[in-house]
Image (cartoon, rainbow over all chains, first blue to last red; front, side, top):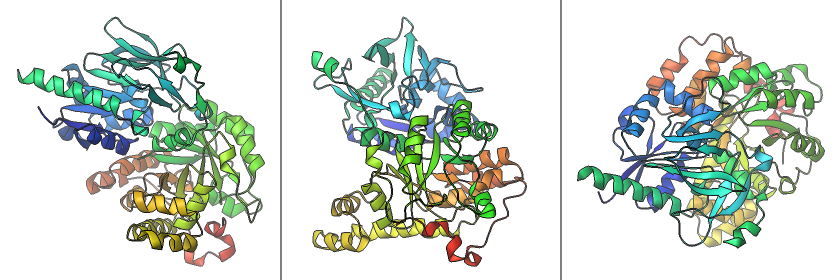
Length: 201
Length: 301
């Protein structure tokens, strides 16, 4: 697979920024709102947005179940902020009826870093991203309370886990798509490419 | 490595303020006056709520001076939901904005729906950690607000009327002016900045980007799922719905329907399904019978 096709779940959130970042990282990027669109992509980004809104719309329009099935089957996924919450097997204090896709054995705390006044930027060392630190943009961001044995912690801020990978699932509390630095997206595109090569063997 | 430990995290940057609005895109922000309404909005899939004492339709009906809401009421709404909470300050009333920031609201709307406190100056929005959204009827007005520090723009429309005509007018105006800038060469951009009464740097940025440097929502008159989809097709990145939801017959149902139509704004079948059996829409006001003095869109300069 030379150029992987990567979708961005486009029910709500900063979809455009992810499409731009993925294209800059040499993927074919397209929005995904329907089950049949999901079936056509090699990997999927769950963008930043309101996790309650996105999960409601995903259930309502029949995307949640096919998405869970594909993640279980090993499709690479990357979630930022709300997307991280969607990939958590468990949310601490979820809103009533809030469902997740799951895929990473972790417990996530929503809005853990506080409300908008506490939103911040900080430089981060992210495992797997060599060179300069990553500019972390945290907006009403969640953090990871704890991870299971299969999940690898990629970054921490102030003693809290803010980036995790488990197999083909990647999640960050912060928003690389807002910075113009596409290295995290490039890492994900590599994951999708490697998965495609493995599948075709 | 150690250099990272030494860098203090930075709050209130332009990137986290504008970035917050990026997270709201494709969504619906709903006016609510009680914690119960806020919960209905959240359950319907709103991306944020605007906490206020009276919806614009009632401000119109009641008359008098409309001010910032009671802090108790705003805090009650903040406690009731997990989605972001916005609240309105009067134009130029930077102390109301300071109060709202101290309450921990996630966005401040310096709004023409309230009675202006200053007929010359808007608040200096750079001096706040809390981001601001402001209304605009045209590109020059939008860029003046961004120059003052607004991190999000909404086309004004005419709040509290349930009539989408002004929302369409203002959004089309902004989009047309942006399209026109795209065709200008460097020489013409200076004159364009003068014409727009906006800083040259911002005018140049818009000409290059082909869009505002901040998120653009639509507001003021959206009452139906089709209205919301119309504004999205015209280029709004999301919609504010004020009186349209809680002045209708079945608010929970209408709120959910508007959320659906905002996401699938380009799919008439889904909009049709969302539009079925919603009960009474708000009554609405014809904007051409509205006296000049009662037009909120004229407030702000």
